[in-house]
Image (tube, rainbow, N blue to C red; front, side, top):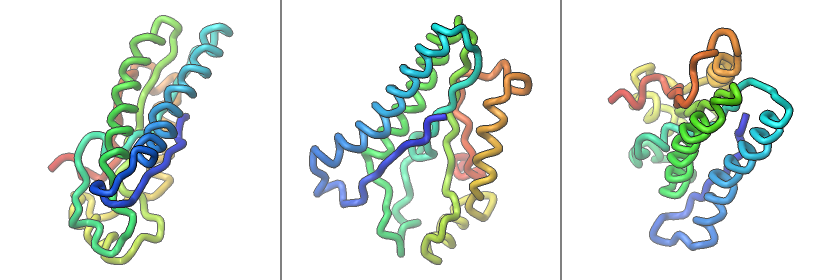
Length: 169
């Protein structure tokens, strides 16, 4: 499972090239590097199984700035671009590792409750059909499901949105 990631929270009008490239380096190249190294190991040792990448709903939809009223951690354009790249890379590697019986999928979480500001939680929950944020366990269960070679044996190249319906609007 590839779950390393970073973000930048400054306003996009003040984004530096170094900030932009750091996010791409960690999120996108980091995911590529893990798939590349693990994939090579699995292929050369005839190991079948699953690789799970972690994307984000913000690789699929743009963030709603009205959610972030009391939260300095607003989403950035480069974070979204890196997560969209991870989703696409998932599809690429699902095709290219399939002949080695390696499934590659992505889990894209929505907001996960982690002591954010009260307004953020309220605003996010109102934006989500489930009317709440996810628990970490709900994301873990999606990863466990996609990792299972019996229940998810025919699932590859997919991006599973675990977002309480937020991207359904």
